[in-house]
Length: 152
Image 1 (cartoon, rainbow, N blue to C red):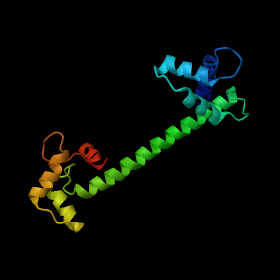
Image 2 (cartoon, rainbow, N blue to C red):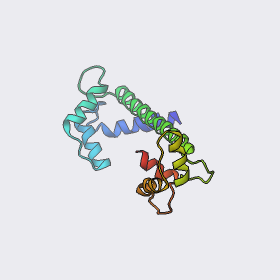
Image 3 (cartoon, helix red, strand yellow):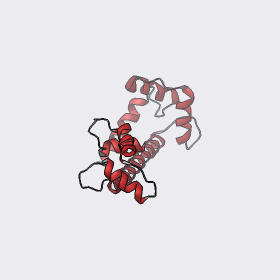
Image 4 (cartoon, one colour):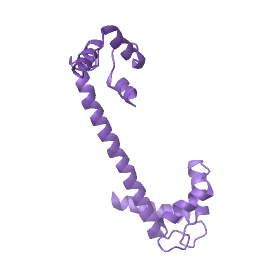
């Protein structure tokens, strides 16, 4: 798969290099992004992106510099995915603390019990009101998805 990705990135580099000089300028990068993504990237942003990977300081990206930039972007994307996975795992753990009845949801009673354990005594009416604010489907309890929204 790495070889395929590398081949795809080399083909992408060749398509970006519109004038065939084996270098990609900020203008060529902007043109490609406009054509493929439909986004008009500001010149300053494209120039900053090129400058961030321009090892030889010529203001252009050679194929090796382009491949390095693409690799860094891929790593940043994976780091974001790992952060999301860790966040979901932590949310599931927290949800499990409140969901004490084995029903797969947080009920007013389970919320009240957990808040009591944390030293924040709340009555049934207050617990129902807390749940109601984030109970998107109106079933009187919080699902994990509703809990995620509440915690964001």
